[in-house]
Length: 115
Image: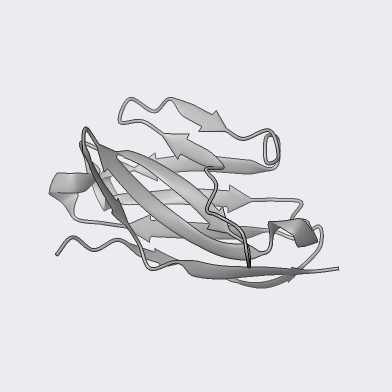
């Protein structure tokens, strides 16, 4: 069973910052595009940031300029630096690893932004 483990969530005031981390098995991590998906209550998961094995990044317009995704292949870890957080960023944040027809999810970490 492939396991991705997220950490770094918590409660923060609007305008604050958090850094999420997601760690996975080395053999999966080094070949996978890694991505972050928040899921707010009553809503579907939505892609907000991704990074390929070559380091190319993509961001949703809602987080562009506020969130930064990065990966450390030596530590099998992908990060999501979240700055200038807004109450609407409140969600469970899931990490996803994608390789060809395979994809794996973590268990999620709660991020709550108070106004």
